[in-house]
Length: 169
Figure 1 (cartoon, one colour):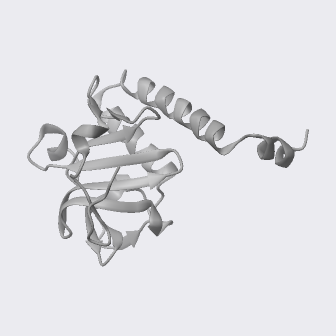
Figure 2: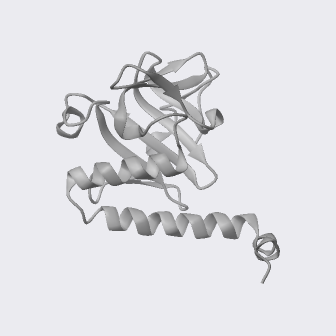
């Protein structure tokens, strides 16, 4: 069967639902692993859906917002950005030291939270304390902390879009 024809017959909402279901399966599998493995799996997920121009999210020492772009400063002193710059949509906190960044792909949002004082944040160079995925039913599921689920309503108004306006989820 012709793949182009097969793909053309799948509607966009059906495709997004399928991708969302696959993502939920991945998240459920990640919840059963140790914290170090969860972080490694989360980096792999970020590298797959939000790749950097150079390097891996696992090698990032800090993230900053430069004008309207997400910049990643690597442990070796180099810097890079996302391959697809438009995937960065919002932040919480200050541009030079965000407390969270929000990335968006066709399957939804991913929030990366930073807190170098937390147990998880102390254990990685970028200070990532949590990575949450927005599911198809608009709840947020943590990739690093088993059983942590947040409603989108709780996140309303927390983010500033890269143009300076409030970002609506």
